[in-house]
Length: 121
Image 1 (tube, rainbow, N blue to C red):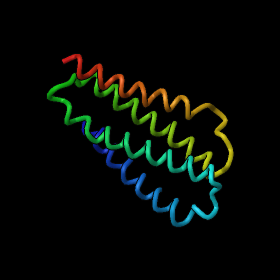
Image 2: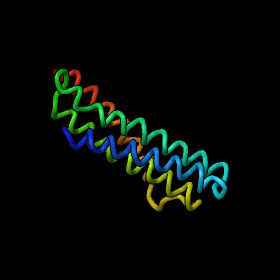
Image 3: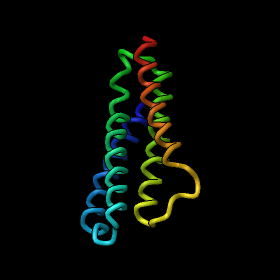
């Protein structure tokens, strides 16, 4: 379970660093739509990074098996959803695959799996 706290802390660190980079260096070159996409990617990354960081704290009241599945779903969702939005914001091009919807579904699945973990105990 330590891997999820580590991944959450890394996601948070990266979100803060990208936020600073975006607001100080990238903002002048981003379109209004690109800036909104970048902001959305940051918010989803940070919130789900915090969720990952907190997962081990649920062990006393939740199933470890389902928490692990939820954690991996959150990691996949952050990479696909936020990653594809960063790509779109910075390049102006949509990714060649529908990664944002897949990532969004993965984030939803992560929350569903955490709920399942809590109900399993």
